[in-house]
Image (cartoon, rainbow, N blue to C red; front, side, top):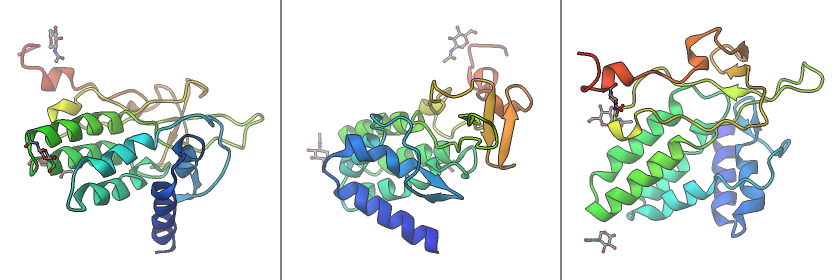
Length: 193
Ligand SMILES: *[C@@H]1O[C@H](CO)[C@@H](O)[C@H](O)[C@H]1NC(C)=O
Ligand SMILES: *[C@@H]1O[C@H](CO)[C@@H](O)[C@H](O)[C@H]1NC(C)=O
Ligand SMILES: *[C@@H]1O[C@H](CO)[C@@H](O)[C@H](O)[C@H]1NC(C)=O
């Protein structure tokens, strides 16, 4: 409950900020599944812009609610598919609006799916190890999201991932989710029969 209130507060603070580029990325910084202000290692990034776009994309409070819900899936301890599920939900929700709005929301869902997710640095190493986020291992519900994955910070150690299911580091190749889900065979009717 506390963390929900905390997140709601941060979301509110974020959405009321008119200078998103400097403070936006702080929204993603968190520990123990709670957003906190910590270690803004890529200060200039402006990922929250996609949430501002989402909030403005449709009326009736629908997109405002979606944008509020879209923060949590990007926190480090969230499951590996929560971001993809949220992108699917954005597309599903768009179906009630006209074609223009649907197209805008689809573009936002695609951008959101490719937004970087939080990963906590491993402070047990010296210097600390910046880790990648693991990849969802199921296909998205909407084919427009096929093959899309979250961005990874190029400053990360390319061989080390943070797995929220275990709460610890995983080496590249040690588990399937250290590589993007291969939906080529299942989702491509022109491929193998
Ligand atoms: C989106 O709609 C599809 C098709 O109706 C459904 O299978 C899926 O569960 C929905 N996903 C979300 C996140 O609502
Ligand atoms: C679609 O809906 C939006 C929001 O209600 C409206 O501004 C726009 O004019 C609509 N476009 C069309 C082509 O109907
Ligand atoms: C489907 O598979 C074919 C043959 O492997 C490939 O050329 C094509 O790019 C694939 N399409 C998609 C959407 O993955």
